Length: 187
Image 1 (cartoon, rainbow, N blue to C red):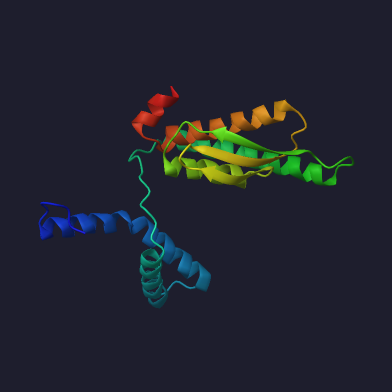
Image 2: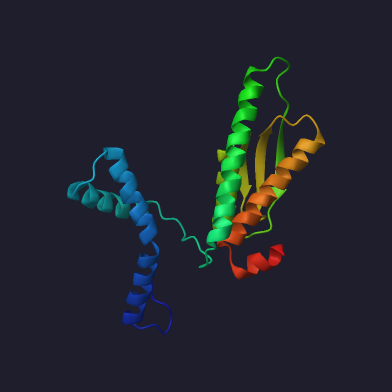
């Protein structure tokens, strides 16, 4: 697709830029292909490359815009938070499964995020879904709202803690990989 006033050479350069932007996805799909076949060989790399390009053209997704910045310190803080809460929640859910008493109360809550970034929103949703006891059931992309199914919420206190946890994850991810505007919006 050529833009108005754009030469064919500029169009090819822009198209190459889009292809270069897709390179991490191609690499990820090729690695996934090799993992599925349990083989690292020239044939698995080449066939993975063909499959990756085919899948990317057949199931086109709009490119995810990245902020272009990465803070190692905040990324390590996010990882530490994630691992700590993963371990703590695993023990909590295991205890709920074996303890005597009634079935725990569950809730569905809506959490409106500050960020408008698809990448950050997806990472917040994945992080919350990976921590036992909560699962993202729906994402309202246009309103930046996550809907979570939360386990063991007998009082409003647990719901408030869960919302606070989602906001903490969002803050850590924005500080690690968000744009300068998103970082400023949090402070």
